[in-house]
Length: 222
Image (cartoon, rainbow, N blue to C red; front, side, top):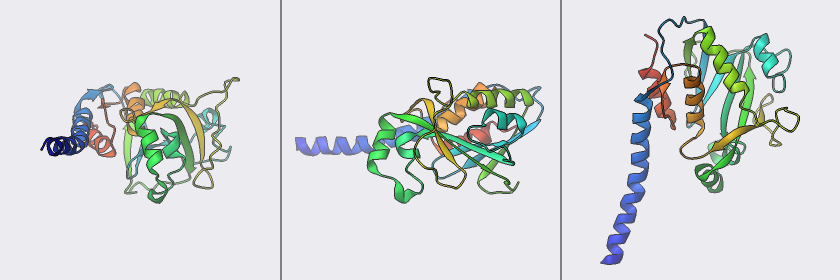
């Protein structure tokens, strides 16, 4: 009987932990952070590209952005730069769900070095179903760009360090990044931190793509 009780308790814990995690993510998405839309004109449009488990930034490529990311963007790049942050073990190997391994998931959950993935595309349709457009002020955008620009982990000379893993497209690349990835600070939380640091209204803790979507809806510019 004692073994049965312990087994039931263990099973209940396994069920309760993910439920509590998603409930906390729901609350974190609604908990206000960042700034306010008051007196913030909608000068610049950025995109948030939605995937099954991850959001990426889509930033408009202009001469300033090309200058900031010369190491990852060719001089003739136009359109949109796509950039995201994630676990080295998971992000550099999971080109599709079939590539995901239990070891990479465990490494990501328990703590892993971080990488940036940078790509670019000449065009994203306004009605593209997997993008959420966000109109922000020039001041907010400048701060956002500066915080993202400061994310690569520099080498001894101060230059960004390219990761040896080959990308998934003909134009993307991986770069070693600052800070560490773990269960409570995953890729979607990094995105939230970049937005709130720029004074953009957003949820305080958004570890899941669902919480990002909820926070975008809750904090939408009216």
